Image (cartoon, rainbow, N blue to C red; front, side, top):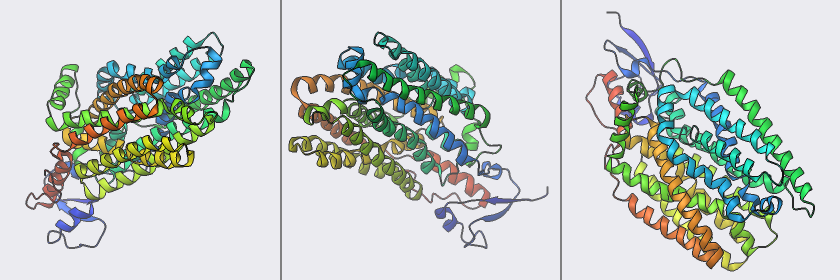
Length: 483
């Protein structure tokens, strides 16, 4: 058999271990000759991966915008439609409620049909919801708005947990955590724009028809943007590259659940993983607290700073923009160090500190300090999102990333509903201090639950073993697979 010449890109830590096996230690690429087939022997990273990730980020962004677009102008929606604050809260709560029953069949569709169909379904749902919301701009059509939000919440099933899947399908082992962070970045951009744009475009008027005119203009822009993006997905977005980007992905793609029974076996494997169950709960608490904090932001800020509708949006923007930087930073740290548990603990601890700080700054009645505290909380609470996704993928490999991420998000929705409903009642009855103290105590519990998780990094181990199979050397673990 003729020898095949292979070019493989290795992470820095693997390059160091390969010294003595390969002549050139300083080159960024290793040129190897092999006789035996290996998962890494048929891998390649394509430049187009960044375009696929960018398109996904835009789809994720539009759906995330729809989640918060009405809650952040709660008082104006109440005034225009003549409904109560809790009714307006349901325009975002419906996203959490719908996700829970739809995630299991939705995750199976994602695993069975592939990435392109998944993202396409998300884009179709978001576009349909946007046009339904346009038709709901009339004082007696609040029910139409709820229908539109329900459609958008179904679309969310096909984008919310997909970031780690996009990263795994298109990116190599040395960029997968960063790519997941950028994918989550789409959610954060959408939420930040949802905080910023509605208060700027929909103004408070004495004439209700003027409020309706502002609202319709905003919703027309959203619908037009979603429509253009839908056509982009149809004609540009691809399901997967011709060759997988890593050995782990090569092995994982061969284990896709072909039938619903196989999918349930995969699901069983995940939910019987003790480490994942602890992460499932702690992740849900953290993200659920963020959901409640965001949904109740308008009411909380106006309780202390009446007439500051615009600053409600700006505080929300501060939370999410800081979270964007946190996501990218922690994703880069994971790719560099592979310290998943340690990064999770540090992020969680400072999310707790940020939430406690945010809670007590309202007593000062000085809004610049509230901006700072909200930014600290956002940096770590939303920065935690990709960390949790990637830790879950490591603990449950070779099960599909989309399944583990879907379950983590389902937990977040359950806690988000609980915290929002209970927090809304506490906010109206006892004030913001009691409401935010509830969220702080919940984060303390979640932080404590992270300690017993054993960091079994199965995906990292699979990548290492496939690389050393090519090197023909001994199986060595250059990275800590279990602590």
